[in-house]
Length: 365
Ligand code: XIL
Image (spheres, rainbow, N blue to C red):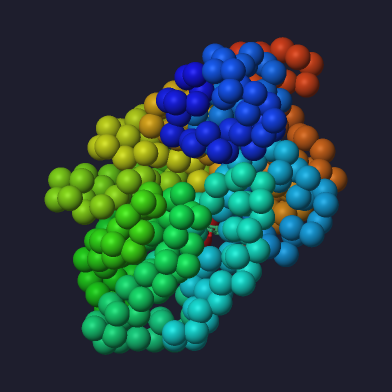
């Protein structure tokens, strides 16, 4: 029963992933884990074989596209809304909450046994002007807290993990927080305030810090986030997980990505790859990323930032696992294999090199 009992993923998701009838038979019969090959033909089921999830970003407006939704429901068991839970959509004017677009995604997920990652509560980007123009600390604190509480309350019991704060650290060598209305008006304590508020709003949800360009261990930005998480754990500030966006250049992850994941995990948090895409989608670069996660026990799942290349925000870079027609690309087979799944020709080839690619980062901004 190791599949059912040891992984971080509830049995409900496995049930949907392998078919409720099959799952019911397994539960009733009390059998051991099924033959690994029998249920490992998709990304989600292959990841579930080691108690992990495999997710994707989803746009509500594409759920009616049958090629898209067929791939979504066949391959993925975790969903992150690409834009629909961001502040500019969920609270476009003060106190007026709009959860319609995200509800469509959450409803889809619950109908198909997929879990949700909430993305994101506090972020300097896709933030409406009425928030970024606040200059009074008491006002901003109460606005931020109300936003967190209202959004988390709306989705209570439906969101497995929240990106409570996204991208709060600066690029470059400072290792400090970036400039934002939250930082500038509330000061360094705004991240702690957000996490404490989030824990009170939904004590059952996992609370994550999420950022990009924190995959290379020696980078000042990585060190800054690491020191924050270490401090939070030492002082009892509630943080459960760190998301590594992993928007990579053609070389894939930095050589030390596994070390980074493992060092963060040693602080007592789960780690996840949350927005994976790789310029030109080299199979080796993808496999190296997946292997880095597979080699860290507390790396509990991976999410790609879109399904088909035509769905990607990185226009023209073809960074995803399916082409515009919805066909599997070579990187798909490499990922499936690295997850321990069975590939199209029935073999489970070894991934040769888990040491990482050239360490190029795709610079976001
Ligand atoms: C991106 C979306 O994919 C785009 O559709 C949108 O126009 C901009 O945001 N880091 C994040 C994600 O945390 O929310 C971003 O998503 C990509 C970078």
